Length: 135
Image (cartoon, rainbow, N blue to C red; front, side, top):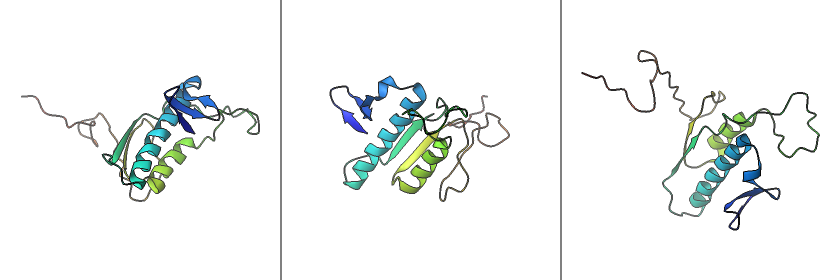
């Protein structure tokens, strides 16, 4: 993966991010965002210390189960790409990552705090912002 100043976009395997499907574009955007933050952390460069990834996995569709994994399809990724994202952030990212997603992260992420938004007033947390009672 590299950044092209000519295209003003990420290029993976010689192909710009813009020519891929929306699921792959979202995943590559998240990878670039966290990679840039980690680059800053490693070099003591200014960075706020956190990233927010808004639904990086919701549009990603895994490979068709009937597709043979050895096929020459550079868009093909493992079905566990979501698990790999969360585990990578948990084990290798030095900042704070806020991931807003409609899927549950895998279990066993040491030190990770998971908050489920229920949109139900009496159960769990209603939403990202606190609900204020109207008088």
